[in-house]
Length: 62
Image 1 (cartoon, one colour):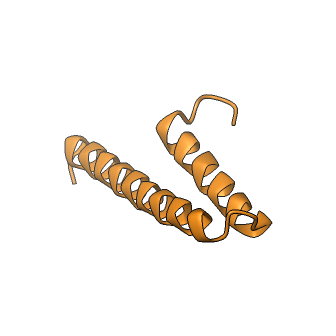
Image 2 (cartoon, rainbow, N blue to C red):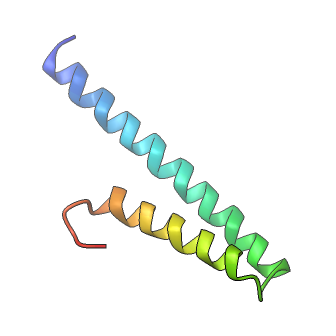
């Protein structure tokens, strides 16, 4: 595998992970509408948001 192929695969994997986490955030946010007072639902959303922030800006403290 060439260096360019390796870099492209890394970017594709990162994009796929970012999209999967974003989709999970959207789904969790929908669940909060039904369980607005649920601490675990809110914590789950917070964890997903932190994961998304880490993927988007890994060099920043989160």
